[in-house]
Amino acid sequence: MLIAIIAITALAAAFGLLLGYANIRFHVEGDPITDQIEKLLPQTQCGQCSFAGCRPYAEAIATGEAEINRCPPGGEAAMVALADLLGRDPVPLDAEAAEEKPKAIAIIKEQECIGCTLCLQACPVDAIIGAAKQMHVVIEDECTGCERCLPPCPVDCIVMEPISQTTDNWRWPFPDNGQEPIATAPLLN
Image: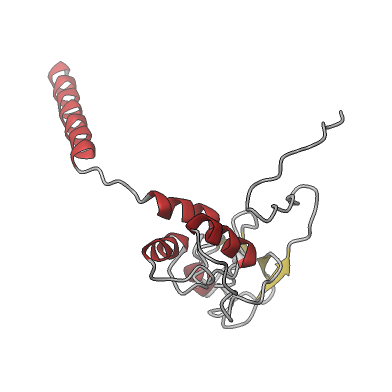
């Protein structure tokens, strides 16, 4: 028994050292400009910009393969922030992105859902749960409102409902320079 414990401990230590060496030896640095661009994007992973998600779009912007005006969820605010970051002139939103929509979440009509799982497969953030031939449900806190679940639904049981603005989800609008506002008056208790 003691020999088995010693052998397993020795193997664990050897593999740990091997992984540590591999991490140092094969470390790949990320592109800092790509990381900054990605932080400015809304992280909906919706694909409306014709890229698979926000990271590939950020990489394309950083390499000059894509224009900064193709993100419908980010709208004009994201485009202006990207222009400021990259030192470019703001450009009009892409024709498809020009229509800014209010933030919304998907709602599945329980009576009409047939459990086909097509919406589950289309959701880029796994915000829909359910099983085959069972009703599906949207996890509201996870839904980004990308609308990718709408086209595959064969019975049109998914609707997009605008998110009502409350004190819990309201955010102070950013000034034109893309920076968060600084409080100028003391808060009252």
